Length: 145
Image 1: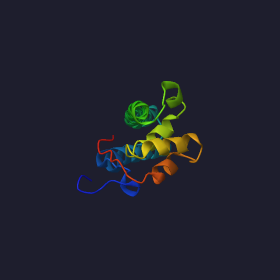
Image 2: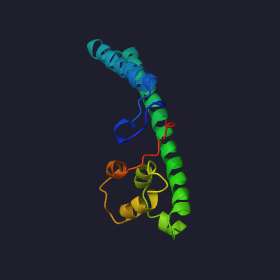
Image 3: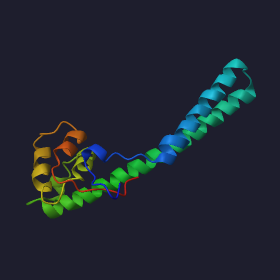
Image 4: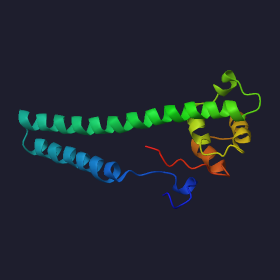
């Protein structure tokens, strides 16, 4: 990704160890152990299924927590950036943005952020995706989780 310019079409990130190994293996394990329990029910098989589900839930929860923490950090960074770049911005006015809106705005260049942010407050965008699609001068974020 470092040699390629980031934009709306290519900004989604896959983490191969998670997306293509850990999650599929743990999900398949649940299916296999669940099938074993159905074909030969026992306390031991039920326990194996509970452990398989717990492992999957643990790994999924860790991933979700990392993403939520990232979103909180992005929101804080964008509120600070809006205070610096938007004419007349105050902590109260910046608090009107939702976390999702702030995450959408993070890709806007400093030059286009004030106008794009005002459009967000005016209700010009239906969701985070629409905000990202409106960005003309993409500010890459290459250190996402």
